[in-house]
Amino acid sequence: MDQIDREILSLLQDDGRMSTTDLAARVGLSLSTCHRRLRALESSGAIAHYRAVVAPDAVGLTFEALVFVTMRRTDVEAVAGFEAAVAAVPNIVDAQRLFGEPDYLLRVLTRDLAAYQELFDTALGSLPGVQRLTSTLVMKRLGPDRAVPIP
Image (cartoon, rainbow, N blue to C red; front, side, top):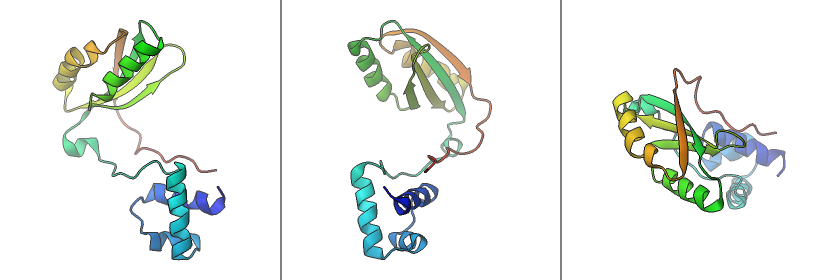
């Protein structure tokens, strides 16, 4: 990956809907060369996917909680079962496996506290292999999701 590829990645992080024509002009390449580089970045996995970033409050999801999960066991079967169950809960919008304690961090969005309590009592409380769940509420997000720094 050279400097031009890095510039392409940086520009697309800022505007994923940028046309290939505009992208080529911004990085100083011909349209066909830029298109080839873009396809190569997609094929290599450097560009994982494209999507719109939806503002949660615009769709009524105004309540956000971070849930710390401590597992009873962390063997392969327990971890696989837990991770499959997490993937099946749409309100869990981000999940990270951590070193040390706790074992996982989940980001959960719901419409309000009552909806979170219902989700906690049903889906979160019944996740397989869980020893303890600890929630903290998000008071304020400090800006949009940040782009990956491109060295």
